Image (cartoon, rainbow over all chains, first blue to last red; front, side):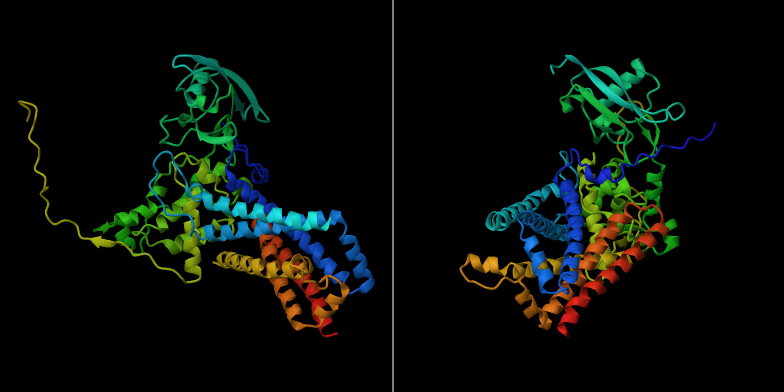
Length: 147
Length: 276
Length: 120
């Protein structure tokens, strides 16, 4: 009887993006990736702007600045600012937790099981609260103030 | 549900017969279920009464062997450990565990999973090979030293953490949360001296550094093992060896074997009259 | 071992970016921030302010430092994401070299402007 090859069953990159019934840490992981890639794209555009348009002289620079003070670009700037705040604060949480520091000790599992990320969830929620507060402050600053 | 009331639940099971089908497809079965019935009971009912060709793994039916892992309503569970009533719905969608190759229906190929587990050398390694093969003494391990790794010894190798992990979904060479947690379990053991042998396997791009703390493995683990904690503690260990900071753990001391051969507890009296 | 060092530097650059980029953002929005308190300063993104900054070495060194840490952190992160999708070792090597070359090109291109203007 010929050997049957088992069928590959990887979720692929959809396994990154779609998180279903999992808890908040998986969504924070997804957002960390998305904000990281978004900031990278912004970085490349920003570097082009501050080098190519800068050395071409005052007129090109001031024309660019006038375009960028358009309210629609302000929204883009706001999104980049929020992405940076999220990526930075979540990154600080990841630095501490990925070095094994703020996760507590291994304990013998007694039902109902509470894993270490769930036990430290109040700290995670505190960091999310700080991110949300800063996002609202920036909203006031960038969008309401500059419109 | 009242105690003896039965409800008709629809099981949408993903079927795939490699000899007949090109692609997996769903088939629906109607199962009468009552309170206390697990998903495994439902699958056994289907196999006995409705379609005998349904393939799935089961052994202990009490969440200790780890055979019956499957995706129930898009979340990995052990089928014997999950009650139908828990979902509060009349339809259950049952699929095999993702990120592992499917052999037939709900049976997945666990050989790559076991091979990765073997690759991290899940046994006590000591420098003295002769002593490792033919030990002459016992090791003394304090309860505190045992506490640092006891939680990670309860692994039943069900494969649910591999299915939950987002990195395992795309990275075919990723070692996986189960192997990394077991690697930590052996490196943290005071009896073990084989840390440097295991690090070249986990301290790679496709080893511990592709874990980004999504935490899905710990959340889905049916035995409460917390592989995410083990992986982060392993990262701490790898970093502290690399930058040469941090305390080395105390190796366990050796205890000479007892010299007296008579047992200290006297042999109990026979309680049955007339027995010898 | 090499991956441990790469990842550890990713951590360190992450913390450095958190500091340097916050300074950069505050300085670029100094007119709005101080204007909130009633102190009026020139718009830091105007041509005049930029000419002033391009003659001072401290600004050039701040920009170059920020550029180095951001490029390392971003490109190492991108490399990790791409490496999760590539199955073979040969593809991994190609991707790593492509990212290193890209990083060097971007660094040379972007650091040329502050240094050239400093010595202009």
